[in-house]
Amino acid sequence: MALSEFDLIARYFAPLGQNGRGVSLGIGDDCAILDVPPGQQLLVSIDTLVEGVHFLPGTAADNLAYRVAGACLSDLAAMGAEPAWITLALTLPEAEELWLKSFSGALAEILDPWNICLVGGDTTRGKQLTISLQVHGWAPKGKALTRNGAQSGDLIYVSGTLGDSAAGLDQLQQKGDNQYLIDRFYRPTPRIETGLAIRSFASAAIDISDGLLADLGHILERSQVGAVVDPAKLPLSAALKSYPAEQTLDWALRGGEDFELAFTVPPQQQQAFESALKDHLVPCTQVGQITKDGGLQLQQPDGSLTACTKDGYRHF
Ligand code: ADP
Ligand code: MG
Image (tube, rainbow, N blue to C red; front, side, top):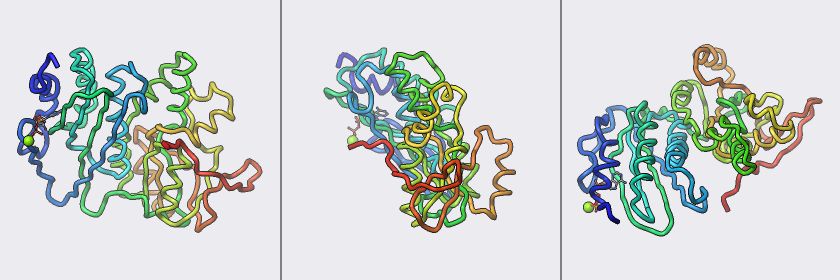
């Protein structure tokens, strides 16, 4: 590499390591030393993007930063955690300054509003561009949301709108120009505020990375319950509605990578939940209800129920 590994870190990544909360020692030593605030638990998650597997060669560096950070932070959001630190492992075919500038600049844009600090990483040379981002956040002890708390009768909600990311990918493949949908694909917004806002009301939560049906399926499996979802209630963006209804429904149910939250709220909490979320920036829409058993069923327009497959996006 023309630019040494150390110059590269100092120039492009050390600036993202300033002013972190609880950072006793950041980038520059063998490890970072971090203090979790008293009474909080540490939550950790990692995501990897591999060129040719998760994105096409030539994808813009800023979009890659948004995508990997969005996916990762979405995991913390799903558990009602507050993000604090990230670590970054980069494998680069070459140290290209324009790429590094664009990638680290976009990463800073995402981290700054949340005061998230880059506390370390690893930089290596390799044939295939590979980006691994690990997020570290915290939540009050015992208060993090998990997948296993849903009970029969709980109401199922989703944040934002569904299906946009799949439509955005379609736009890219068809050379369409709907920038809203394309951004929803490249630049998912992790619903961190929403995760924090629902934390004291929700009984279970997950982020939608593989499609609503697949991810709700994980809640059902872990909570040992069933569910009925009403497709007519799914929140759809105006942009998505420019597609035929059958297509939008399929994307809203099975499309991956919206990174919205799906969560359950006990009926006795519904009123308090809805009034607490009244002024919340991201709409949360009730789309169904947890049942004692019966798997995952879709409500038809005539009121009848049909069993449905949980298939979303499959990685293998
Ligand atoms: P070591 O060889 O002890 O693992 P390195 O030489 O790989 O350490 O890294 C030096 C310092 O720079 C470490 O603090 C490491 O966490 C940090 N670092 C390396 N690569 C990155 C990166 N891409 N982003 C942020 N920090 C990094
Ligand atoms: Mg070392």
